[in-house]
Length: 248
Image (tube, rainbow, N blue to C red):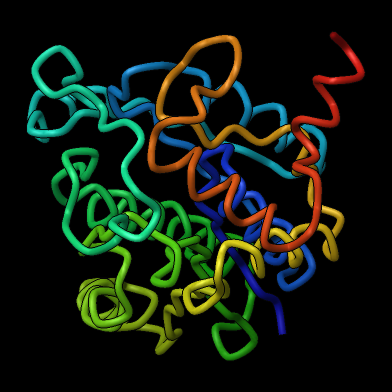
């Protein structure tokens, strides 16, 4: 059996941990990173670095036009919508914040699946791989325990979009190859994700979670707050802070 995987790598703690998990789980893995018109390129720089550190093939796809479509978000239009700061930890996740990007994961998953299907079809139709010996997997890092409340990070969303992607694909319709969306950290707390990343030897010291693009994390956005909470509860010093401390 030959397994093909595409992992969505944004350069953050969660996606890096999932990518390390995927690397140990599939035969042929490609990381896909999207330049979608986000407010800064920091996460893309870190995703590039992580892919190199992990020796994983990576494609950076420019869909920066998305900011013109999904404009109602602090991540694509910060001049109109400031990024929320210092929200209480116990209030994060109980409403959908302005950092939600409309239908971002729907678009990301469609493009990632197109890449995965292209690689599998090439292997079958050009190189003679047997469809019966082929697996197709998409790896993503949504989480419903310590998260910001995004609707496209919930299990029912992934159940529904998996069916749509499968029914619209050639690999399923013609070759009966199922498409699996793997979400290995969806039910983990941030502290459990941090521990998982450490166990998998993921390069967490090179991850960037902050919504801002300054030299150092802002420590006040939802993502920074949740990351700090996770490492604190895990009883681990954030490897990123250890790394920059050695170079300061």
